Length: 79
Image 1 (cartoon, rainbow, N blue to C red):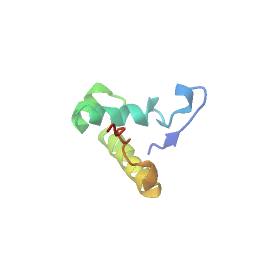
Image 2 (cartoon, helix red, strand yellow; image 1 turned 60 degrees about the horizontal axis):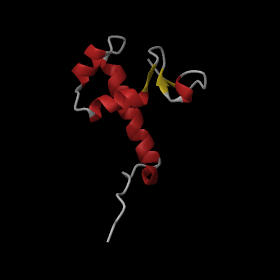
Image 3 (cartoon, one colour; image 1 turned 90 degrees about the vertical axis):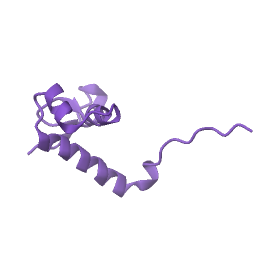
């Protein structure tokens, strides 16, 4: 089973999925680009379905632990 690692000498310490050297951010960004789980696994063959699901579950746990940090940035209001 994979886990999250952070190494200051790799990707400036961004959280990464162990054993695959891909940041969680990169994997989540694929969903923002409207890719699905199968697309992501095809693009990054070092991943399996469970890895992508793990990243999503990890993100959900972080959001639930710190919901105040999960709010989307607000656009400035200009009168």
